[in-house]
Length: 171
Image 1 (cartoon, one colour):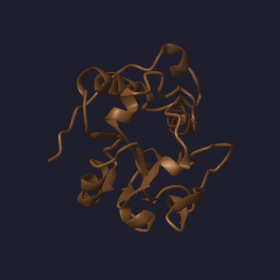
Image 2 (cartoon, one colour):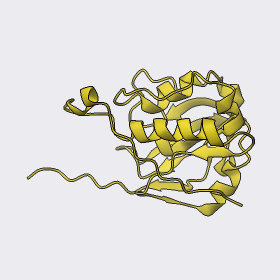
Image 3 (cartoon, one colour):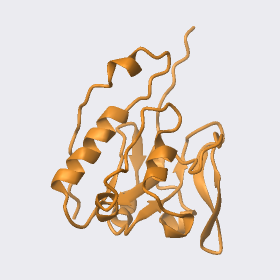
């Protein structure tokens, strides 16, 4: 059984609205974290689903069993077409993503889930208003290691999420 969907609407602070490239979706995700800490007291997991992605419902069944942090591939994202943990012998040894940069966790927002209990045990965990750093800084704030990560989607070998964002270029 799945309990969802709660829609959150929160305004981005004015100082970030003025940026040429403001961090999108952070205010709403922070509001969701606040709601989870207040209302979801035991069990379950959360996932930052997006309205422009498509999901294999089997992944949702896997996500709900997340004990700490789970990760899985996301297709049709970045110029490489995939964002995924690189796995050898059941362990994450790196990441395949179109933008690695200096990110500890170079994953797409749609490529991870977190246990509610794990989040609630980390009251300082939050998502910053930093463009391009939202995922990694949030995951870093949870204070876990790659050994803690549960690999979903057949040990991260199957793509169960597809990003369908359409980027329009100015003509």
